[in-house]
Amino acid sequence: MGAKSGKAPGVRAGDNKRDHSTPRLVPRASRLASVVFQTPWGWMGVSETMKGINAVVLPKASRQAVLSELGSPSAESLEGRTSPRLREAQAQLIGYLAGMRRSFDLPLDLSRGTSFQQKVWRTLRSISYGRLRSYQWVAIRVGGSQYARAVGNAVGANPMPIVIPCHRIVAQDMSLGGFSCGLPTKRKLLTLEGTLAELR
Image 1 (cartoon, rainbow, N blue to C red):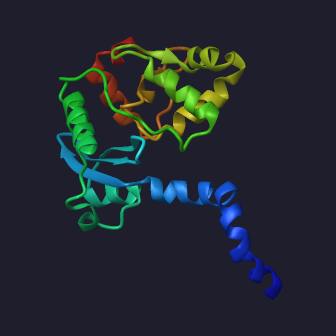
Image 2 (cartoon, helix red, strand yellow; image 1 turned 180 degrees about the horizontal axis):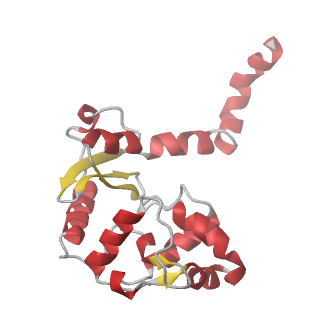
């Protein structure tokens, strides 16, 4: 044991860069700041890294519930740390919920997803406001219809709902399908976009 720990300082300089620092530091250090704000639909939250927006929390009943999902210990820790990019994300989301915005122009950091998840999320971003697509439609675009189940898992893991519009994905038979943030919210979003009536 002693010999191993004696080696560690010498090994750290070369090894850490290759091995440990990337997986360990990226999740923690990459999250720079978050903002929690109120909308007519409830409290929402957004967080960012140096690369871009990396999480969106859909409307919840309380500020604390949003903070908890963002992994922020308290509201105080967020005071005075809102960047221009977070303010822009907040403004765009509020505009969308008010029916005044149909697309998002924000830099996104998708690095928390696997390469397959990132491919699915990019495909979701190509689905326009007011359009519905099936899991199979997405699967065909990311490798083949046999990936429909994997696509469903990737859609469910989407860290930025609304901005990456997973609510526009429905079942092949035009039934509502699933939604990680709850079907009532999905219905509300599709009602806002005028597409709920297209479903069975």
